Image 1 (cartoon, rainbow, N blue to C red):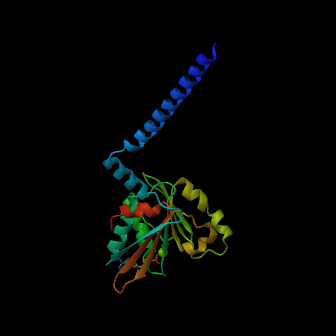
Image 2: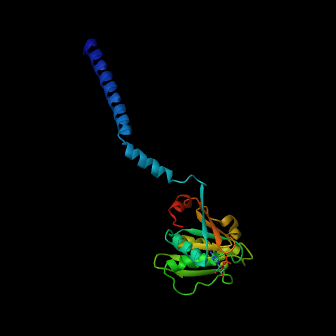
Length: 206
Ligand SMILES: Nc1ncnc2c1ncn2[C@@H]1O[C@H](COP(=O)(O)OP(=O)(O)O)[C@@H](O)[C@H]1O
Ligand SMILES: [Mg+2]
């Protein structure tokens, strides 16, 4: 092979690779540019619903009478799924058990829904999922929480916890907190969606 032919081959190969590389980068750019305005907006909307780690969302509802507390429970029930943790905070008589009853009624439990004050936990089988209702008011030792099967309960179904402050370090990151306070004749519910509940709370009807 003559030196001229060799130079020609090298020149042809480098020209071809330059053209190929340019075409590839144009292709990559083309793919980026191919998103329509509508698709961009949809992507932004989807990304906006992905919660930042540790993010929270808060809402408040006025519950003018007992029925409204149960109705809030029903609205929460519509969003509940396996792995969910609903914490219920507030003084004695704030309406924590009433709200839990609203959740269970909406899930189809028609029998009695007693306060688990003495048993510490009550288990329910509903058509949609199993629900464990905890009341930790009389808890004497944090070890008891394991013995009560708290972690198993929220891996197998949904849990509702009255006096969740006693969970301490066992408090799950993803949770819906309901804080109930007396507002005179009725109650005020402050809802705080933590972790994955930060985005789900926006869908709650109350
Ligand atoms: N929105 C409300 N307005 C007025 N009374 C309410 C409301 N919600 C619940 N109650 C009443 O509060 C009382 C105590 O409720 P309960 O659910 O047992 O409280 P807790 O479990 O927080 O101790 C009940 O008599 C219930 O009828
Ligand atoms: Mg109670």
